[in-house]
Length: 89
Image 1 (cartoon, helix red, strand yellow):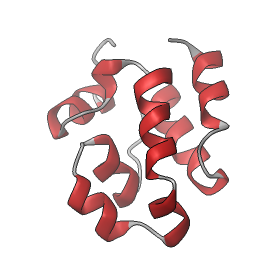
Image 2 (cartoon, one colour):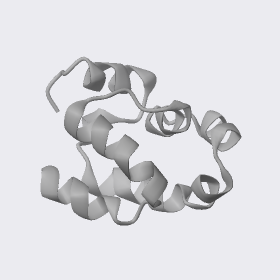
Image 3 (cartoon, helix red, strand yellow):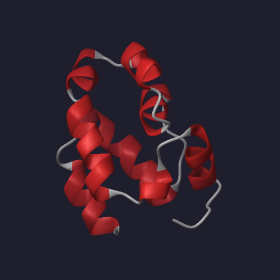
């Protein structure tokens, strides 16, 4: 999975979340609370932090994560911490 895969997949995600996801996956920048919860696979945390549009888009965000980004970059708190530290995907 490369930059073009990520950029293409981001088209499925609401515009207000695209920069946070782009920064996370391409530059390894820590995301905001909602995206962090999503990336860490914290369903309750994500739902409680979501604005209405983000809440309605959880399926599209999950599809993006499943199809367009490195699998080791998300899925648990540990995976997110490792990604942010720059461990190889």
